[in-house]
Image (cartoon, rainbow, N blue to C red; front, side, top):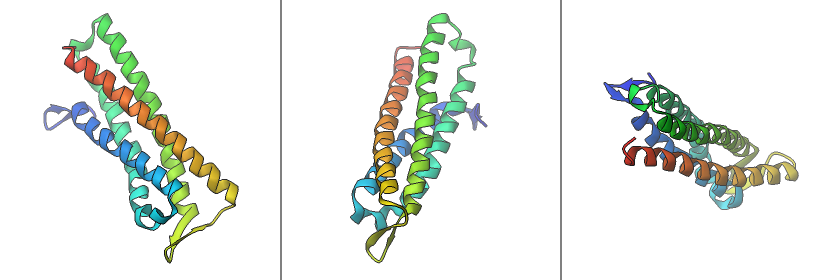
Length: 159
């Protein structure tokens, strides 16, 4: 499942889902946190992205671990590059998981009813969740960039 899809290495296929879904979750979470008028329109996309993005990162991470076991990647120089790449991916997974949890909390704590956002929690909880969403979105965006950039450099430098 993590090694190959229809005979093709799975990692290059799975990473595309992560590269698309992580920024979509980050953007949707930030919009939901800071723009109350958007909440009734993007609540369910936020929930979908919060469930899909961590799964996509998990699949990309696990398939990458299978991919790195290939004999072509066993040189000490390549192992160092792979270790750095995996380090970024591990951090990305934890930050996107945190963002997903905060996004789900926001989606059900700040419901949109009748065109107005109704906060079902103390005001302080709303501000903490909104602030966390923005910070986690920025950090997740950084780590999806660093993970992708380090992987792309390995590919385009000829392994």
